[in-house]
Length: 125
Image 1 (spheres, one colour):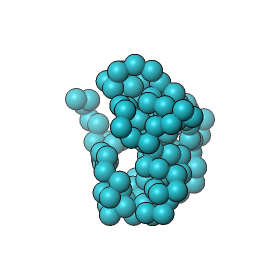
Image 2 (cartoon, rainbow, N blue to C red):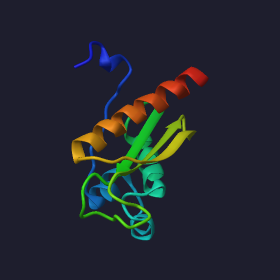
Image 3 (tube, rainbow, N blue to C red):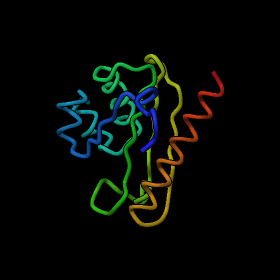
Image 4 (cartoon, one colour):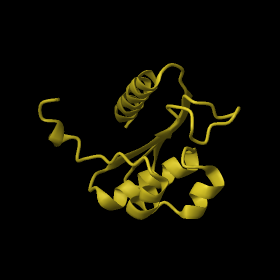
Protein backbone atom coordinates (compact mmCIF):
# COMPACT_ATOMS: atom_id res chain seq x y z
CA UNK A 1 0.00 0.00 0.00
CA UNK A 2 1.01 3.60 -0.54
CA UNK A 3 0.93 5.95 2.44
CA UNK A 4 -1.64 8.73 2.05
CA UNK A 5 -2.98 7.29 -1.24
CA UNK A 6 -6.43 8.56 -0.29
CA UNK A 7 -5.15 12.11 -0.65
CA UNK A 8 -4.93 11.72 -4.42
CA UNK A 9 -6.89 8.54 -5.28
CA UNK A 10 -10.62 8.69 -4.56
CA UNK A 11 -11.38 5.16 -5.73
CA UNK A 12 -11.63 2.74 -8.58
CA UNK A 13 -13.87 0.10 -10.09
CA UNK A 14 -12.74 -3.17 -11.67
CA UNK A 15 -15.53 -3.94 -14.10
CA UNK A 16 -14.87 -6.98 -16.29
CA UNK A 17 -18.44 -7.93 -17.20
CA UNK A 18 -20.05 -6.09 -20.12
CA UNK A 19 -23.44 -6.03 -18.37
CA UNK A 20 -21.86 -4.41 -15.31
CA UNK A 21 -20.28 -1.77 -17.56
CA UNK A 22 -23.78 -1.02 -18.83
CA UNK A 23 -25.53 -1.10 -15.46
CA UNK A 24 -22.95 0.56 -13.21
CA UNK A 25 -21.04 2.84 -15.58
CA UNK A 26 -23.92 3.58 -17.97
CA UNK A 27 -22.00 2.39 -21.03
CA UNK A 28 -24.50 2.13 -23.88
CA UNK A 29 -25.26 -1.46 -24.92
CA UNK A 30 -25.11 -0.48 -28.61
CA UNK A 31 -21.61 0.92 -28.10
CA UNK A 32 -20.42 -2.39 -26.66
CA UNK A 33 -22.10 -4.37 -29.45
CA UNK A 34 -20.70 -2.13 -32.18
CA UNK A 35 -17.13 -1.72 -30.92
CA UNK A 36 -16.72 -4.63 -28.40
CA UNK A 37 -16.11 -4.25 -24.65
CA UNK A 38 -12.38 -3.87 -25.31
CA UNK A 39 -12.24 -0.76 -27.51
CA UNK A 40 -11.31 2.90 -27.27
CA UNK A 41 -14.96 3.88 -27.69
CA UNK A 42 -16.07 1.80 -24.70
CA UNK A 43 -13.03 2.90 -22.69
CA UNK A 44 -14.03 6.53 -23.25
CA UNK A 45 -17.56 5.74 -22.08
CA UNK A 46 -16.14 4.05 -18.97
CA UNK A 47 -14.16 7.19 -18.13
CA UNK A 48 -17.29 9.30 -18.51
CA UNK A 49 -19.31 6.83 -16.44
CA UNK A 50 -16.73 6.96 -13.67
CA UNK A 51 -17.08 10.74 -13.56
CA UNK A 52 -20.74 10.30 -12.60
CA UNK A 53 -19.86 7.96 -9.72
CA UNK A 54 -16.60 9.21 -8.26
CA UNK A 55 -16.08 12.90 -7.39
CA UNK A 56 -12.65 13.69 -8.83
CA UNK A 57 -11.04 15.82 -11.51
CA UNK A 58 -9.36 13.01 -13.45
CA UNK A 59 -11.09 9.78 -14.44
CA UNK A 60 -9.26 6.98 -16.24
CA UNK A 61 -10.90 4.12 -18.10
CA UNK A 62 -8.91 1.07 -19.12
CA UNK A 63 -9.99 -1.93 -21.18
CA UNK A 64 -7.96 -4.63 -22.81
CA UNK A 65 -7.34 -8.23 -23.67
CA UNK A 66 -5.11 -10.05 -21.21
CA UNK A 67 -6.00 -13.61 -22.24
CA UNK A 68 -7.68 -15.44 -25.13
CA UNK A 69 -11.45 -15.66 -25.14
CA UNK A 70 -12.43 -12.01 -25.45
CA UNK A 71 -12.93 -9.93 -28.57
CA UNK A 72 -9.45 -10.57 -29.96
CA UNK A 73 -8.89 -10.42 -33.72
CA UNK A 74 -5.85 -10.27 -35.97
CA UNK A 75 -6.01 -6.47 -35.73
CA UNK A 76 -6.69 -6.56 -31.97
CA UNK A 77 -4.74 -9.46 -30.47
CA UNK A 78 -4.36 -10.46 -26.84
CA UNK A 79 -2.21 -7.75 -25.26
CA UNK A 80 -4.16 -4.88 -26.79
CA UNK A 81 -5.01 -2.28 -24.14
CA UNK A 82 -6.91 1.00 -24.35
CA UNK A 83 -6.50 3.87 -21.87
CA UNK A 84 -8.71 6.96 -21.92
CA UNK A 85 -8.58 9.74 -19.34
CA UNK A 86 -10.63 12.86 -18.80
CA UNK A 87 -9.91 15.93 -16.71
CA UNK A 88 -13.10 17.69 -15.64
CA UNK A 89 -14.90 16.05 -18.57
CA UNK A 90 -12.40 16.97 -21.29
CA UNK A 91 -9.96 14.57 -22.91
CA UNK A 92 -6.71 14.46 -20.96
CA UNK A 93 -5.04 11.60 -22.83
CA UNK A 94 -5.81 8.39 -24.67
CA UNK A 95 -3.57 5.65 -25.95
CA UNK A 96 -3.71 2.18 -27.46
CA UNK A 97 -1.00 -0.29 -26.51
CA UNK A 98 -0.03 -3.71 -27.80
CA UNK A 99 1.72 -5.57 -24.99
CA UNK A 100 3.06 -9.12 -25.07
CA UNK A 101 3.50 -11.74 -22.41
CA UNK A 102 1.39 -13.58 -19.90
CA UNK A 103 -1.67 -12.04 -18.25
CA UNK A 104 0.29 -10.72 -15.26
CA UNK A 105 2.89 -9.13 -17.54
CA UNK A 106 0.21 -7.41 -19.60
CA UNK A 107 -1.50 -6.09 -16.47
CA UNK A 108 1.82 -4.84 -15.05
CA UNK A 109 2.72 -3.16 -18.34
CA UNK A 110 -0.72 -1.54 -18.40
CA UNK A 111 -0.36 -0.15 -14.88
CA UNK A 112 3.09 1.20 -15.69
CA UNK A 113 1.92 2.75 -18.97
CA UNK A 114 -1.08 4.36 -17.29
CA UNK A 115 1.07 5.78 -14.49
CA UNK A 116 3.53 7.18 -17.04
CA UNK A 117 0.75 8.76 -19.10
CA UNK A 118 -0.80 10.28 -15.99
CA UNK A 119 2.50 11.68 -14.69
CA UNK A 120 3.36 13.10 -18.11
CA UNK A 121 -0.07 14.71 -18.30
CA UNK A 122 0.15 16.17 -14.80
CA UNK A 123 3.56 17.66 -15.60
CA UNK A 124 2.12 19.24 -18.75
CA UNK A 125 -0.71 21.15 -17.08
